[in-house]
Amino acid sequence: MTLTLHNFFRSSTSTRLRAALNLKGLDYGYVAYALRKGETRTPRFLALNPQGLVPALEREDGRVLTQSMAIIEWLDETCPQSPLLPADADGRARVRALAQMIACEVHPLNNLRVLGYLAEHFDADEAAQKAWFTHWVTATFDALEATLVRDRDTGTFCHGDTPGLADICLYAQVWNNRRFQIDTSAWPTIAGIFDRLDGIAAFRDAAPPNQPDAA
Image (cartoon, rainbow, N blue to C red; front, side, top):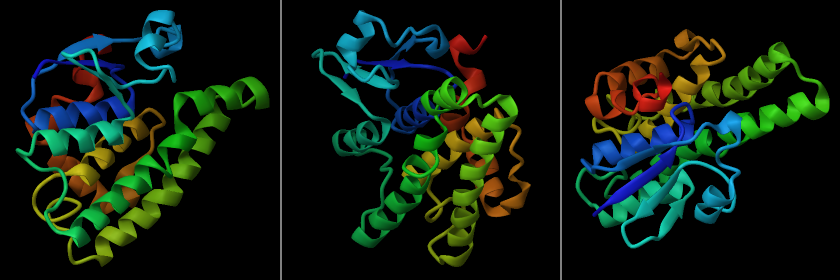
């Protein structure tokens, strides 16, 4: 299977997908876009993804998959090695809930488009944008930390001792938090999981600083 990943090194959704591809052991071509330069708003890119968003995963048959969470679940269904979701229904529900706390509650409020809109239409300077970003991260990370501490299904990683979908989302978000100097020490369980994930090559190789367009 020949895959081409259209992405941006700092995009947390792109980080998610890179980690998933790495965990699956799948090779892929890497095409970089600079979001602040409008490179995903060109006719060429909009033909791939009319939303003008990364990541997009292009298959050898020309089909383009979009939205990181949907792509990751497609990978799990089509490449069953190294599953990213548990085998049992209760486990899958828990992992999806943990992942969606980040993917649905934090990321949509804090992505580049939202921060840009706040700056353009509400005169939000860098300090105001940081306050906004930090507020929404804290609201969810407080709850995520409490959930991970409370649940007996939490193990070395978010669910048991094998990294999966929830860990992918956590890892990408913590990297995103670093842009705004958000210290994870207030969430020791989250911080510990991140450190363990960062010791795994599949995750470390997906990290923003390790991408070819990060230079």
